[in-house]
Amino acid sequence: MALPQTFALAVILAGASLFEFGQDRSVDELVQVMRDWSDPRPVRSILMVGNSRTSENDLPMMLRRIADSAHAPEKYQVLLLAPNGSSFQSLSSDWRVAREIGKPWDDAVFQGESRGQSSIEQAAGFMASGTNLLQAAHPRRTPPLLIVNWAYDRSEYDGAGDPALAKEVDDGRAQHIRAIQGAHAELARRTGAHAVNVGKVWEILHAGLPAVPLTSDGNHPTPAASYFVALCLYHAMSGRDVAAVSWAPGGVPAETAAQIRHLVDQYRSAL
Image 1: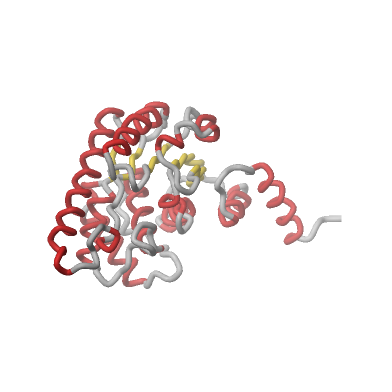
Image 2 (image 1 turned 180 degrees about the horizontal axis):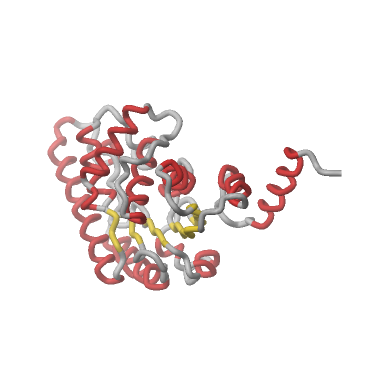
């Protein structure tokens, strides 16, 4: 006798959960894996390596839904390896990353730690370990994609609460942004990676839509910001404009989502 559909799906998901033990898969992604069995499109396999900035708001599933809504000819299947608090240095010694990074993925995306340019020592570790990671990846479709990080919110810098130190705070944040941009540009140059300049367009997005919060805590992205990052990655992978994208995450007003898409298309040369 055939199993009821809901029970059968539960059994399949349980098996998939065991199979995926140790990998950062969401329930939505596991359900998508089941649905993909009946999707005739070819697979575009993507490895995404990073940290809590990368995993926040289920960025891999956002990327998949963006691609599907734009009628992508392939089904994007993303494996996320992004333990909270990870740095390039810790990721370079992670057994899961070592197991996956050399496989023939179509695309490989990397995001370094937010503190990577916070000190001389952190910067040296970011560069050395980032070079090792990016050079170990050999994706088939695009060069390794390096997400250029965004700076912390202004409120996170020393002296932000003192109006008398406003200029010093702004200068310090601007200096940090320059350090982030320079480090990612150099890492991309050394490794042949493609720098997806999220950090640069992030500042433009904040200036153009100041009422839209981009972080939840001064560091981690809101759903609107993760949507923005996913759109940037979709463009970098596909080469397509994002005007054809119709999906937006819950909680992001349709008008705001449309403004974010327009801005990504407007500044796509940075991506």
